[in-house]
Image (cartoon, rainbow, N blue to C red; front, side, top):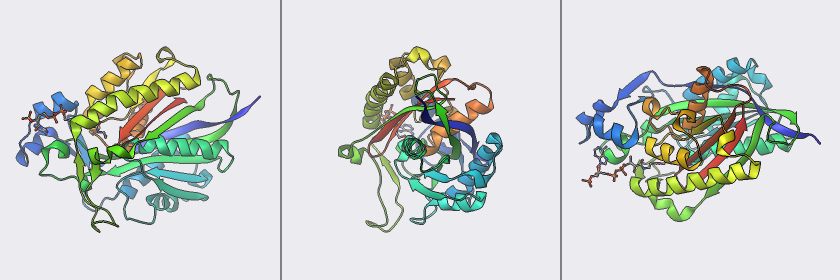
Length: 324
Ligand code: UT7
């Protein structure tokens, strides 16, 4: 029996030119390079230039992914863009990308903050398997610097800007876990924890975009438990174990969360793609950014089984298995 699989054709990423080192925050708030490195693993992050919007980052990543896949924009049937920092309340930022790359079909945004790429990937997988689209571009793109409170040391040092894109295309598989493509995705959310990580504004409340607010240590505790659990669930459903995974490509919020999740999933740190030191937490962009970096430098090779996972505001979380 054959099944339809959403198979990776290529990926790409973009980071704004401006690099902000940890030490630069010490001019604005009571912090230090040492505290940020020790507590988070972050050393630097990129911030978008004035006038550079989320769509600009997404379009650059989309073009890089098209070049890597060796296809034209018109071959894309759908674009799903995960972001919590869209250009505007509407229209969807994805439609800007659609126009810029000359894609047809349809384009829309999804909002699950740091888990956004997992939600977008799950949606793309379902659309491809359901026959709605043959070739889908999934993007995570953020300009989180625009919603940071630069007087709050508990949040402003953590986040960065960037974009990553992945192109998936329908191919026939056997249905077994040796197939290339998306082998499984699990999503969860729990609105009871809304107050732990949120933005204090919005179109229907304050009429302003608002700023990020986070109870870091509480989110940390949820993250280490929920990510390990959902990683276990997705692996169990696909009939694989940590030993089968070539690379874990996690959301990049905190090196200590990444290390804890890897350990609980039975993966040594040598099998984990870590970019948090260079990018900080880029929310929905962090997983596709890490993926694209590791594909570009040759770590991830065709046939490798990838375990991706992320958690963020909502709380919303998810995990996916993709054989590259
Ligand atoms: O992507 C969405 C998901 N988000 C996450 O996964 C983030 C999860 N949380 C975390 O990564 C960590 O909780 C943080 C990195 C946010 C904070 O690390 P922590 O080890 O949990 O530190 P803490 O919040 O318990 O703070 C320890 C101390 C406090 O001072 P006192 O009360 O002990 O005197 C903080 O006020 O460090 C202080 N502190 C800072 N000091 C210097 C907090 N932020 C800073 C800072 N610089 N930037």
